[in-house]
Length: 230
Image (cartoon, rainbow, N blue to C red; front, top):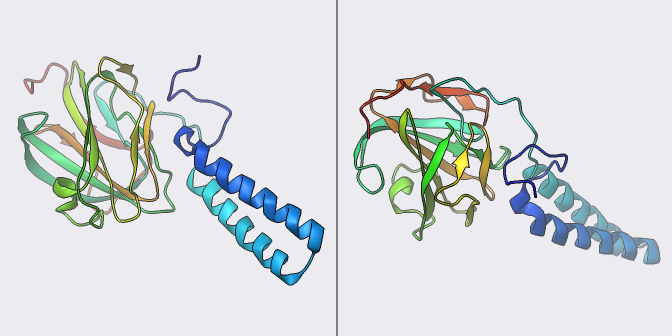
């Protein structure tokens, strides 16, 4: 059985299978009705369902990528734009001073998330909350999210998948104890939202606000081995 996150021939996100199936059935039904009746009404239905089908396939696309994997290099956990880089005291999972890098994902981005730095998963935690616009600073604290902590020789890293107005579901397929590799797929946020990445406070940050990030490819930060950041 192929583990979640491995490269594969299926070009769509694993978490989008149900949605893709439903929309494909609707599109197939519209094709059948048009072939049976061939009138303006069935033609309009076919046009609308074809457009919807195309948008859903585009949204759930999940291309394989050549992952950048170097010792201590933190890579982009997903596609999006860096909207904030700030010092932040993380008091729920890491209990220490960190640097928080926030990324906003719009509906045109690939919405599959990838592990920013390989290690062992120690925490996966879903917290209910609000559904504010994901780009608002307070969304990181009050919106529904799924948090995942990984631990390695470079310390502990926290990544939060944060829900928004449209993105009402964050999917994380990992479990505590899983061993993950840099760039491995670990989850999905449906229909645009936000990612927050919490790094050791002395990490060398390689991006700036406004930078566009590609998941699995863009270098985010460089960590030193055996930092005293536990």
